[in-house]
Length: 318
Length: 249
Image (cartoon, rainbow over all chains, first blue to last red; front, side):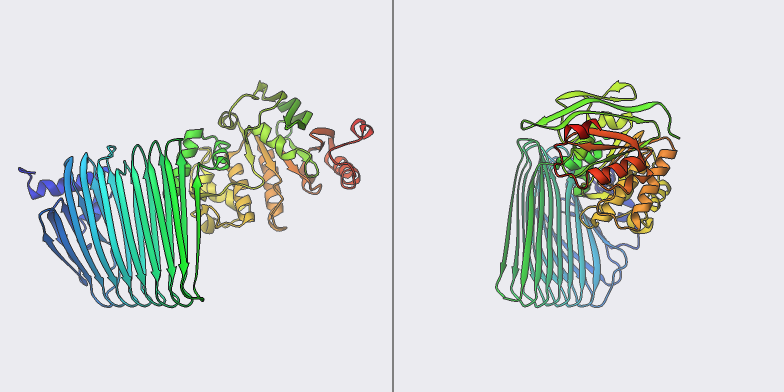
């Protein structure tokens, strides 16, 4: 990385983000809290009223503390942009989030690895969402066509009473490489958790998704929704676990994996358990080829078979 | 306007499955702009006929020919038939997660644009503001999904629309809207094959054919043929095994 200036790196990140289909004006707006990190360098960190962002560069990454103050509702989404532009590199992000009681914020994380041949992106997150607070986190990845990225996001999320946590993980552009996604949620009374993961596996991608929700508070609710499409020789295993540990807790695990081709492999392991006789947890999982009736429906409108499959896949991953 | 030009001609069509003829020497002609009703009880081959014309469900005729606008289409793919102007509204349309109603209505490319999509939703009694951005997935009721299927067909403006049981699962208020849509489509020059077991639905048809045991028993004006169907088929003790004298009647 010798010879890179901060300005050049920052511009490089913006260009890569835009090239991947993102709107870089969101990363330049003055009304928006944002954090742009290239490898282990913080290129931009901007706060808005009610949000405090502290960063510390480490040997291989950055430690981040994000605080949303009590009672503050952040109008515009906070943008986090992580990336590695060279072909090789390691990025370890340690993220600690504290959303204080009655606060509200949406975070959009862009993870950009367009040239990766041998890149590792690790994130260890601890997210603490206070009572009656709302925290939305949407993470979208932009990868190149070489399966050279290893993505390892791990998170422990604690929800206070009546807190809301909505997490969307989206890795549908470029090749996944290796994904080892591992989230565990601890839900307070009356809280709501929604975990959505959408991944498109190609070539020799290896995808592991493990999501676990512990419904520990009375009336806690959760949904784990996973959509995976595989083609070529991609391999995926999805484990969705929900534990109903409190009265009137309700959880649902919903997994669809589509396999397009003869060499891709998909597994789904839903685990549902209740330790309280008033709790209820359900699951549904469907794995298989793309539904022939869906394909024919679109072909009867004039699409050829490949176009029809594309529409179905894009819909599922939208 | 119904013309004399034949859009669809089916000649001695056969489909044998597991040693049994599902379609057994079926002959049929549909003219340009004609609404042609196909009346038949359950199991007489109505849906199979629809699939054979559209080329779906991996059905390949074991005999006979399907001629569309003078060209044998028996060996064409579904897409090729659709591009020639044939389309099908399924009796139980597929649900597709993530495909929005507006995009589904614009798929054919004939009627791109929100305004047109809104128009066709209104034609089937659906409020555009409530439906355009919904997915055609499991969140729709059966009736809503069927009406969207009909709107999609109207948007496509095919030369031949195959409508498989458009009345099933549709409430009494919506059915006239759907039937009006079919009449409008016909007025604009599209032909329609209106498949049903309900003789009231084919009142809008110019002609009606009665199907039994995979063949056409009779073809005639809507009122007479429906009357004959009601009197003979509703009480028939041997559906799909028509007596010789009935076949010759």
